[in-house]
Image 1 (cartoon, rainbow, N blue to C red):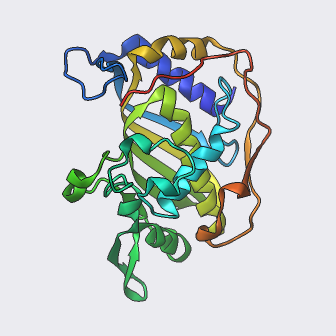
Image 2 (image 1 turned 180 degrees about the horizontal axis):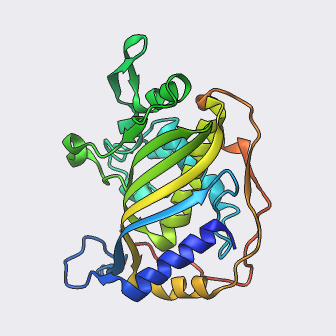
Length: 285
């Protein structure tokens, strides 16, 4: 059983056994047929993964192809700093695109904004990503290496407020640790996805900063399972996991974060339970 399997099963069982129901609360989300997409949830989840020892991938279902799209999205947000849906290879953001083809002032748009930061060389203007990379190389002992996408001033201009909204990067004994803060998490469709893509980002940042990879701590505010997902989740958590130790290989020795491409990444030592078939997952919007 992988670390990702263990955390997924533990969290889903806790939701199913002790979760709060959203029924009667006038939820925003709807299914495609117009019915309310209600859910059960728990509050304040923390899952930790030792990414340096094992890349966090669920074996209860097939993630061998999903990983590429997850990395593509994280590069779209953090490297391209884009809000244009046409610049993303997958179609996961199509439903949130406005008439201008963007998701508004969300995600990559926020990371592209430049600010004036204090540095050892004086005030420098850069965006949040470049400031993180600057500090990792020039002041790795700092406890202020952080990003924040939840810009209250511009929430009204976002087609979807950021779910994964904040990071903190900490260097301890030459290992790069990442804390990811997320306001809301759909366990079936997004948990494995978010964990994989931020673990990949952590590996990229570690490589370009000359650091080893440490732990990923994933903090989730509202962690939920939608009503129509419950039978699928129950099937997954009852399935047999595969005893493997996935490893992310980056086939690009670059020290420049902006040189990475989706094709540079491959997964070794991964397998999944081929007996589990969950079909097309209904998506709440």
